[in-house]
Image 1 (cartoon, rainbow, N blue to C red):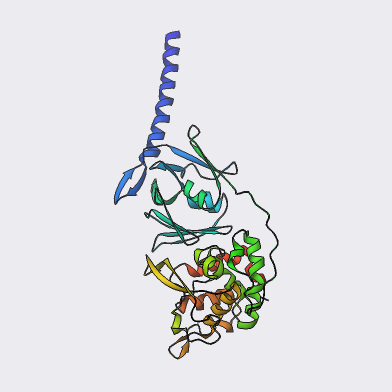
Image 2: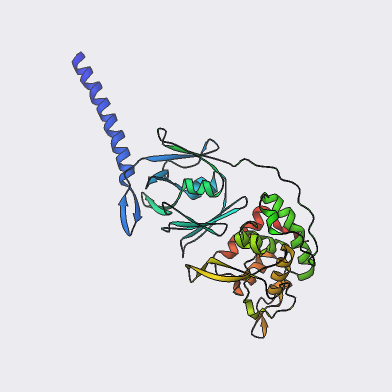
Length: 358
């Protein structure tokens, strides 16, 4: 009798172990990813992703180890949970844009590079799509993302987990009031050590004063400045006080009210999007003595630039709705990015930039 009981126990233990092994194998067998034009079967383990000690991923979509890099599902771990970054994704170009605090990161699936506030950074492992049992999920390199956004990152091999932590906040000195347009006043160099709230506090009054002069909503000006200059920290902003990527050859430089001297310039290689494809070109940009001149010149262009005999952005100042102004700007050919409208709208709503539209 005892022999039968012992055999039964052994059989139960064996079956339990077999089920566990099969379950693990099935999860791995159902997971694939594409690399170098071929489909690869994922055979390594799954990784948990924590943010400030709270689990962010679901069991069905864990982190995975590819090319010795933990890749994480961005939407679950960075947007819906975790630091809750602002994000936009363009299906046509497979480009993901993430914004958090004063940093904006752009990366494209299967491309071993990303742009951090406009600056190119090489990646060891490109973002890629992993198929979890039929569901394609865009995965991004966890460590590279954490470094870009100044987030804490710890990888614990035995626990098969990564731990992401929010950056330590610092207190900076109060920002001086904005000087009038005729003076150099505030320069982009001041933005180096600023937090997002300090940047908005510094730029808000500038954009608001310009709105009263030009009719371009302050929220639109602020959102464009944040997106296009990386919160004033881009190379172009730091070296030329150019907050909007204004080139030297826009519309023949003939519109009324330009605050540019017509001579000062700064050349830099920059990434742009044409027909859904990203290209790198060397372009000449306007250089200003201060941020206020950049804002004034930008608004003068939006209000007065011509397309033939008609205004390029006709009807811009006739509406006080920021979504309508952004749409007019995009449709007038100002931006080449297919996600430009959603990016600006997201920034305005997240940081309540429309508080300066009065």
